[in-house]
Image (cartoon, rainbow, N blue to C red; front, top):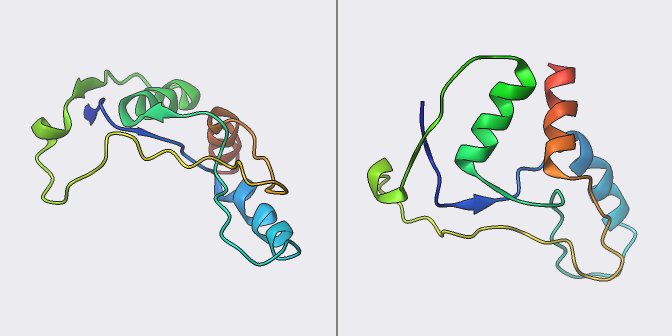
Length: 103
């Protein structure tokens, strides 16, 4: 499977995000970024999904240019939960395991 390997993101499990959003409602008005701790490339994310699911699939890392998407994508689109009072979420890999367990 060909997956982009030059873009970084912070995959965030909604099962961790939803309770954090409820906590934010009690914070002062403002903009809060809430995302899983850590980051990975889309290719690393795909590899982790297959590994955690016990599936054998080779991931071929490709560039954004090779992918050929019409919309431009940033190489680094990681959100950080750094504003004081912002709930901290577990690492993205913990969220991945929780998501797969739920499925």
